[in-house]
Amino acid sequence: MGFEYGFGGILVSLLSTAGGGDALLDTHTKPSRPIERGMAGPGLLAHVLVAKFADHLPLYRQSVIYAREGVELDRSLLAKWVGHSAALLQPLVDTLRRHVMAATKLHADDTPVPVLAPGNGKTKTGRLWVYVRDDRTSGDATPPAVWFAYTPDRKGIHPQQHLESFNGTLQADAYGGYQAIYETGRVAEAACWAHARRQFYELYAARPNSLNTEALERIGALYKIEEQIRGKPPDVRQAYRLAQARPLLDQLHAWLSAKLGTLSRKSDTSRAILYALNRWEALTRYCDDGRLEIDNLPVERALRGVAIGRRNYLFAGADSGEERAAAIYSLIGTAELNGVDPEAYPRFVLARIADHPINRVDELMPWVVTEQLVTPA
Image (cartoon, rainbow, N blue to C red; front, side, top):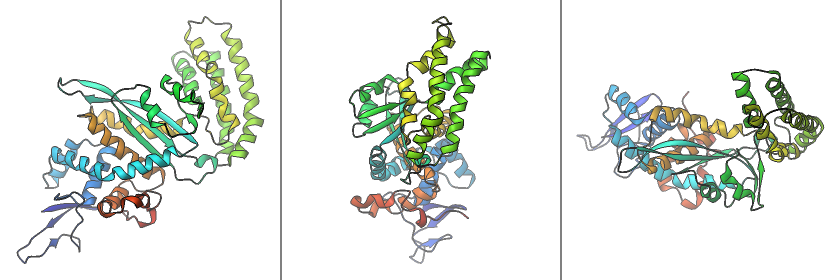
């Protein structure tokens, strides 16, 4: 007996019937079995992956849900399916990484993930790194994509290895591990105005005053300029920013410098001002390059699902589990960026990947197969 998942629910295929043939519920052909000698069809595997990594349902909860539908699929079996599926999909993830790193501008960030440490039953803190290629706001039609990578710690060597083939501008936070990358001369730093704004917003939320209020208003004026040029070509964006944003940036720099001179360097407000002034060149680089964004929000959006999942899963059972998670997050996230149904896509790919020529795996990327996907009505 094997199981498949249609858009309406689980379908049970009854194999080797008394008549010697295959009796299938609601299907006409023998189901594809992506996992050798496995009993899960591509639709069921895709549903398990999406339920865990897009809908943030832990495997034990999925097992309970399937049991209510009359199908006993224990958590350990589901975990094996996730592992096998991730292995099958790895060639796609490798191709996706190359596509992301071929960009001339990337958004980058990382987030902590708790992982069970072997041997002592305690958890350690690993990191999920995320790199986003998305130039649609500057009028570029190149397919957007996101690539996740897991590491057991936050040492700077990890992003340095991830980005070893990248040449261009990296939009990221102030994490010191990126510094060695900038020092190579092949990667320029672009900082994030959302991070700079957050320094003042936290002060405003705790105790509003005229200084943090004015800082937020001045930064807000920069964002209003961006609304006028979203989706425009880089040269148009650059010219508009130089005419409209550059004068405001110069005024903001002078104002922050003047205010800093009136404050104790130990105050929270001074720290907020210094955060911006110490990163001024990187914060204003977007003004001179129409391909860049004012902030790093594309990558923060990519991490929202990870944050929800972290609350629901509590911790991963091993480093290998987070490595698999990174692979699936990459494919599902890229599908969503391209407007592709996140369940239809892995269903489609898992039904084909085992027999697909490895040197033509780019034919299965989300932005290529869109019109071939079958999605629910």
